[in-house]
Each structure stands twice: as C-alpha cells, then as structure tokens.
Amino acid sequence: MLNFNQTNTDVLPSSETMAKDPGLRKFMLGIYQKMALGLVLTAIVSYAVLNSPFVLNLLYTFGITAEGRQVLTGYTPLGWIVAFAPMALSFISGMFMQKLDAAISGFFYWLFVVIMGISLASIAFLYTGESIARVFMITAIAFGGLSLIGYTTKVNMTGWRTFLYMGVLGLIAAGIANIFFQSSMVSLITAVIGVLLFSALIAYQTQSLKITYYETPNLSDRQMAALTYIGALGLYINFINLFLSLLRLFGSRD
Image 1 (cartoon, rainbow, N blue to C red):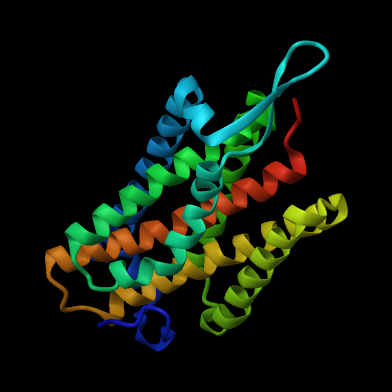
Image 2: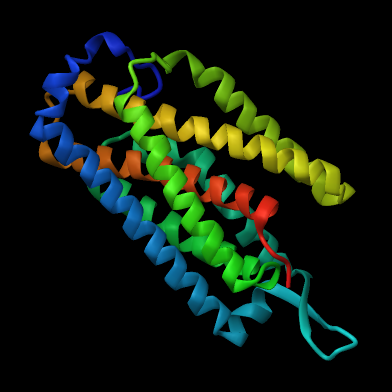
C-alpha cells in the first residue's frame, strides 16, 4: 500500500522539466476535472433536495415566522446523520482510496459528493442565493490562486502536514462544541481560522500531489486513475470547507 502522507521534494525534477512533462499535466488535469465535476454534481443534488418537499421533511424541521414565512428550525434524526456523514466518510476514506482500485475509489468519491450535496442543501435556508453564488465565485478564484501557488512554489511544505491536520481536528472539535454553546464569537473565530487553514491545505495538497506523481512512476493506468480520485477528493473537501468558512464570514442571511 502506498503512503501518500509522507512526501519528499527531493524527487521533484527541475521546474523546466515539470513544465514540459505531459504526464504530470494529464495527471493534474484529471484531478481538477474530477473535482470540478464533483462540485457540479453537488450543486445538482442540493438543488434536487431543495425542490423535493418529501426529502426536506425527512431531513429538517420547519417553523413559520410571524410573517408567514417557512424557516428551518432544526434537523430530524436522519438529518443529523446526513449532516455528519461527510465528516465520517472523510475519516474512513483511506480504507477505500489507498488501495488504488479505480472502481472502488471512483465509487467512494461519487458517493461522497452526493452525500455532501444532500448535506449542503440546508445552507439555502440560512443564506441568500445571491450571497451563496457570490461566495462560491470568491472561493473558486481563491482556490485557483492557492492551487497555483502550491503547484509552482519552491517552498517545501511537506513539514506543514502535522500542524495542518491537527488544526483541522481542533476546528472540528470547536465546531461540534459550538453546536451546544451557540456562541457567535466562537463561530466567527472558527470561520477565520478555517479560511486560513483550508487555504494552506489547498496549497499543501497541490504540492503533495505533484510530489506523489513523481514518487510513483510505475503505476498502471488504472492505478493512476485511482490516484486522481484520491487527489480530487482531498481538494474537493478543502474547497467545500473553504467555501463554508467564507460563507460564515461574508454570507448574507435571509
């Protein structure tokens, strides 16, 4: 089994060689294409959920305001399961993805994307559609810049791994605790930290994927396809988390 967490920048050839390497270009484009398709499918699934009263009532509880407007008041038991499912799946993803089986990796990736789409439907009840679209565009632009930095930088970011992933665990713990405390200050602080943390993770993972490509030169086409799903999943998760952090900071409430 390959270890995708321990990488070494010493395996990288010169910048000129990488710029002309068609294999690296194909590998990274495969990752970005799968990630982009995953985001599109997530949006489609969320839209479908929002337009299905039956599914909405399975997942959420609603109330009526004094003005007669329907508002989201909470989650049903199934809704809580769906809300935490992406987090649970991300923790067990290594069990499925690192076997380098294209069929298994692909199935897990698309399953994750669909469940994330169902989970994200709730943000439409919390923020205006205009602000969701605006923040998504900001996230896409930021992602492009951050991934480009990770791809082109000569700074060795491999030592960041422990700090970044410990930061993610701390952020998750703070977010879960704030479900019960409902502190606006904690929400603001975790959103700011989330923006910084997931921005750094996007750059780090982009560099890590480039290194992994050169550390595994003898993979078959199917193994390389599986590897693109692994890369797409990591970047997809960081894109979504950056988007949600920015949305908490700049999203307009209904």
